[in-house]
Amino acid sequence: MHRKLLLSCMLAVGVLSGCQTAPRPLEPIPDINAFGGAGGVGQGGTGQVGTGQGQGGMGGNGQYSHGAGGRNPQGGQGGAGQYGGNGQGQGGYGQGGYGGAGMAGQGNSPYTPADLNNPSSILAQRVIYFDYDQARIRAEYLPVLEAHASLLSAYPNLRVRLEGHADERGSREYNVALSERRGYSVRDYMAARGLKNQQAEIVGYGEEVPASLGHGEKSWSENRRVEIIYVGE
Image (cartoon, rainbow, N blue to C red):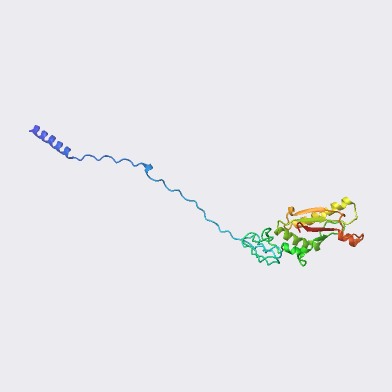
């Protein structure tokens, strides 16, 4: 009987084993290269809005055609001239200059090259007189030099020749050196107010080119001078 019971149990285990479901095969591991990588982080900055400062230089009046604006984003207003129309500065250097094809004002100066030919302008004064044996600029001529410096600063293509002179007293060598010192004195004063050194040439004539041929103090005072000569006039 025990033998029959053992046989029955073994038969039951066999039947139950045949009914179990076979295990599912494992899914393959995904290939990480099949997916796109993470996008990079952009670094775009924020632009800054620039602001123009100051007023543009005045446009040129007179015979040089359209006025030239100053060096400024707002530009300066050109003036009406004898031979040209009304200029209008446009951002930076403006329009015009010499007949629309040459020099444009680049600074905030109240003067233009046309003022050089205006007898009522301070720029019509081109002679600086000196005391005896002196190269120091007299106070009465400081406004004149400041006006010329303003013009030359605004129009950097302008060039001047500073011709120094002396009266007849003293040796020739001494007077040449003295007249040169007078020219450098004028240049240095204007350079401190906007003139570029390369815009000015200094020549010392000593007593060789007198403005007056007399031999008294009146003639001597007229000969102790520096003449401001604009190149190309």
